[in-house]
Structures are given as structure tokens and as C-alpha cells.
Length: 158
Length: 158
DNA sequence: TTGTTAATAGTCAAAAATAGTCAAACAATC
DNA sequence: GATTGTTTGACTATTTTTGACTATTAACAA
Image (cartoon, rainbow over all chains, first blue to last red; front, side, top):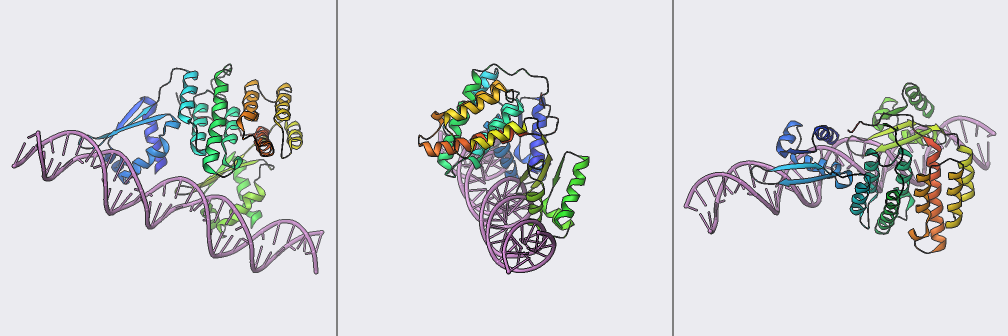
């Protein structure tokens, strides 16, 4: 269900750079409880994945999902570095890498290298410590990319 | 039983380069306990045998088996992985990366990413601990370079 | 203005729906 | 008989679904 609703919203977002819904309407449309919509948004439309969410309660209330717009690769990298902050979970870190791949800022191989480096199996198991180290490593890699020549890319480098 | 399930999955994989199952369904189909499926996967669909496995728990969970191609540079990478062992200094690690770059096994950008990850400024300062973590990370990265998923169209997110 | 009600959305934790781990029991092979 | 491989099930971990309760806002009544 979550996947279906996610797909629906992403489809709309392919045409527009933002979408505004009424929570109860979408819940009805997909025949689920309203809080399911919150779950979808909290897990699939995070800032690490490149989305901003605004909402208002009360009469005429809404939930608005906005695709984050960036100027260019450099802007994207800077934005991501900010988002990462000084601590990041495995999941969020992987979302960031995935996003960079989807936006053609890194190649698939680069993404895979970065993903292994984010994997929890690499770290100590102390969550707080791991998240700080992971953040440091990811930020260092992104900073590095800022000063590298962009990859020459074909339209589709799968 | 293990052989039968293995054969079944491999038959499907002859037609497609990946297969997605629901563990409980397959267990039912072959009338065995679900954890049997894990056994099959752990013994017959390893990375050494050319398979990658991904899974998700919870509602809508799945196990996905993906055929991977082993790349040409296998020997070189295997040798490097052996040399690295379970502990490596910053200097030696950087030499390894440099060598891979000189031998055209990795690109310049990939080399830079890996070098950042080897840098001592990332680590704790406890030499023994750092060298083990560095080795683990470098080996994980190299293992990753050995395999490649078959071409799959990336979603067209224009 | 000021309360009150209706119409929203948000939070949180329990329950349900999955998959993973591990070790004991069992079976096959050497 | 010892070793290695397989099967089983109890227990754990993760993700999703659900619903009761809370918070906010707008509209309206006093």
C-alpha cells in the first residue's frame, strides 16, 4: 500500500514540482487509514530524498510535497552536505547517495562504492559513534566531488 | 529439498536476470519451513557463485536474487584483497588505490573517493583500531568492484 | 471579541506481516 | 565414528498497518 501511494504521488510529481493533497481524500482513494499517508510521507518523501513537506490543519487543510530545486551539481552537493550534518543514519545516508545517483551527479559505480561505505556492517555497532563517523566520511566524499571534474556522461549510464 | 528449491529458482533465473519471491510463499509451495529458504540462499546464491541478494521485512516484504557478472579485473582485485588483510596503514591503503588507478581498474574520481575514505583524518587516532576499520572499508569497496549487475533500465526521472 | 464546534492533520504505540539468526536434531558421506 | 551438510523451529529484527488520542485552524455563534 505504501509503495502504491508513493508511486502515485511520484507520478504526479513527474509533471509538477509540487503536489498538494487532502489527506483524507487520498486515504479514501486508496482505502486506507489517514495516518497511512503520514507514514508514506515520513518514509518516502524525506529531505534526504529531495522533498520538502508543508501542511496545514483545520478547514481547508492540506499536505504539500515539494521537490527541492537546486541550481546545479555544486549546489546539490552543498545542499546535501548541509542536510547530512554531523551525524546520519545508515538509511538516510543511503537515501542521499541514491539521490545523487538519480540526479546523475555520481555514476552507478561511485554510488556503489559510497553505499558500501555507509553500510552498518562496516561500523562498531555504537549507533551514536557510527552515525558521526558515517557523516564525516560521507561529507568528506561529497566535498571531494565538489572539486572534481564532473563525469562525462552518456544519456543513460546503466 | 535444498536442491529442488535451488533448481526452481535457477530455472526462473534462466529467463530473467532477477527474481523476487515472498519467502513464506515459496516455503508453502515446497512444503518446508521458511528458514529453509534462507539456507538455500546462503549456500547456493552467494556472491562467489554470482548472485546478489536483497530483501525487505515487514508488510510487502520480499527476497530478491539478482544475477551478477564477474568482471575482468577479478584477479587483480582478489590479489589486492588478500594483500590488504585485516589491517592496513593509511600509506599502504593509498598505494593500493593508486595502483588500481594506474592499472585503469578505477577512474580518477573513484580513486579520489576511495582515497578520502582511507585518510587518517577520518579515523579515531587509535592506530590498531583505525587500521582494522580502514582495511574493512577498503576490502568492502574492492569486493564491490568485482561484480556488476546486468543492465537494468534506470527509471526515467526527467 | 471570545468561545465553541467542525474540519482538518499529526503522533504514537500496538498489532500484523513479513524476513533473519542460530543452534539442536537429523541425515549423508567419508 | 567423525565430519559435513540439511532440516526444523524458537526466537529476533524490521517494516507496514491501524486506530485511538492530540493539535491546529477556520467558521460561526454569542
